[in-house]
View 1: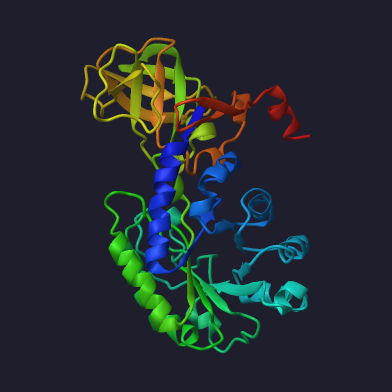
View 2: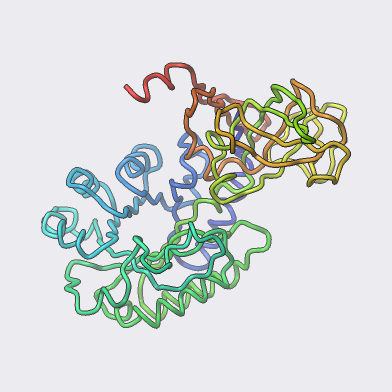
Length: 397
């Protein structure tokens, strides 16, 4: 079961509200990172809206969050544009060819003519600061964003904003490097009266204890002053980080060629794909009523339940390779050690499973999909979604 802590969400969004008020910028939830709309009433007041990676996320933002809807997609089709123009506030394009294709229909829309809808371009500052190539949009040949060379001499009538998104789980020092590259290559545009907003995208780890929020505030304030433009931030992970867990049950334990294997009722490939894609190693806890309440605990804790933190292989006496119930040979979460052997029926808690997890889940192999629950501030558990055979069946026909 996925369990999201409302209290933890509100702690994060309170930090984000303080940052945006200090910096004087807009700050929206990136739905690609966290889209559990049943939580929106609890966090709506702290944020300015949502950013959407396409039409469906945009509709979710319109219907369940309200406020500003900032839309960007690597490509739109005619139906996307027709619907987004009716409610989006920013409509950012990935290429000049897409803008040229839809410019006439967008600029003739009443909301564009009234100034309610603004259009922008995603730029590529060609400044790589991350460590994981799959999440780097600044690599040579990137399909995301327009380079300064491509933009030179282009007709930019109708465009009033620039948008970059180059960070992923990074601190504000990397934003500072990126802003220097943006200024060197696109500063002349941002300083013109035509451009009224700069979207700095997401990937900012604002709610991590180690994040330098004071520097972020200074950088945003400087950009607002230098460019006389509105600044927008689009964090997703920073909203939902350390707010949710995935509770799993041990189904089987056996040994194979010197490895003790534990098969769980949750899957890396189906239920926590970043474990394979990033790759990412989640913190794991063994839930036991007899365990001491150690200082290290998961984001969501249950009354009268204690937690034993799993260690790296060899840290405790019994190391297990945790794997899912699918037929994918690589459906392996990782090797973890415990003070005692795992047995069928044990509960394992995977921490930090709210962001970039539920939005990516699948029904691969027909594996049962975990329910989704909210833990309210008084500790009450509310199951907001259960999945059944019909969800698997109806997805493909």
